[in-house]
Image (tube, rainbow, N blue to C red):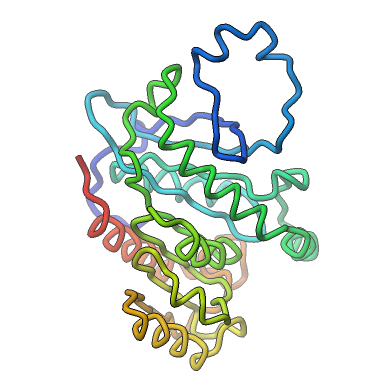
Amino acid sequence: MPQQETMYSLDQIGYTLVRFNSTGIFETHKDRMVDPYAETRMHKVPQVEGIQYAPQITGKILPSIVVLHDQWGVTSPLQDIAKGLACHGYVVLVPNLYGRIGGMVTANAEVAEALMEKLNEQQALQDINACFEYLNCNMAEDTLLERTVRNGHGIVGFGMGGTLAAKTAAHRRRLQAAVAIGGTIPSNPETAQELHCPLMLQQAGQSPQSTEEELEHFCQTAKDAGKKVELHTYDEAAPGFWYPNSPNYRAADLDTALQRSLDFISSLIKKV
């Protein structure tokens, strides 16, 4: 994370393993209290699993950020990034987008490519949408969730997650801010035209995924539709510059990308 002043120290950040219904419709704590089979009943719909980070404080309502992983899965470096974002006063939820296909984390490039190809995009978007509904749910048995701002949400995605973050911005009507760090920019004009919130694109200059012309066309299409898109390009960077185990890793560019993401999100999401 960038070395700027934070609201909370890493020691003040706790985490919770979460699991919830992919439909975004949840039973309450009281519903389960009166159901003797709640703990043993097999779920009829897929479940979203993930990790939630939050400052261990009381008396404050916090906005939320959903962080989407790249093709490698929910790796330790990604978890460190999420924990660092929580230090700035956010509840940060990291869903495992590979949950429906086994939930793998890998350091093998061939396996990562196969996982990304196997991911069902529509199901992933459904799971991401369920994350926001889960953060809105404020379930009584979880004191952390009682402190989240309803619909006070941003999203940050890396690589594959960046592609999904951009598409989520055109899918989730109540989203307030979206950041795509890397990833492939959607080629269809509908995504740019239907953005429901401001979108920041942070792209590697050496990327074969989206050309300069494609980026400019996407931004212009969004602008013509009255949407706000902010583009930043890292000229010397290649895809994977955000991932420490990648040969393309560039720590300074990652720090800049995270700082820009925080500034962008904090300007759009009001903290209570």
